[in-house]
Length: 130
Image (cartoon, rainbow, N blue to C red; front, side, top):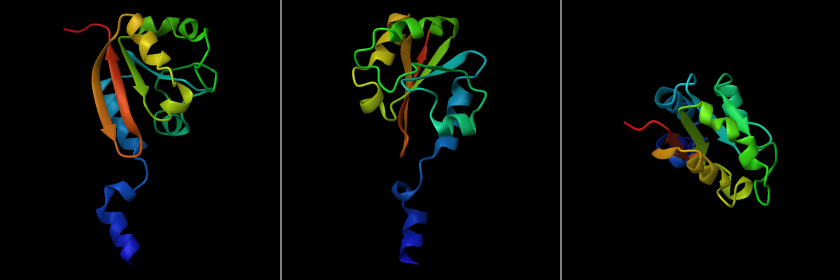
């Protein structure tokens, strides 16, 4: 009984709120003009589950470390107005911060950073700042 009560009143004990994060992303960065980039073989499973139609670009590898092909794989990012990058597992999959650096090199500017318990930080980048 005590554990159930703690779960209800303490947000840190709850599961990762992927649905809430993805709803927030879709409101701020519509799928018609945005893409999510992952340093992984595919989008994270919760992203595919809760936002199956959201555009993604993946590196196709488990890590970006010492991988010179990443910038080539991300070359079509310039066809989008907005880019979303998750910090989730980034220390393992993108330890050298290649995704953010490549996004910035392609003319994007970091315009948003929000946090979600369990999921971590989500970074938003935009090309046309007004």
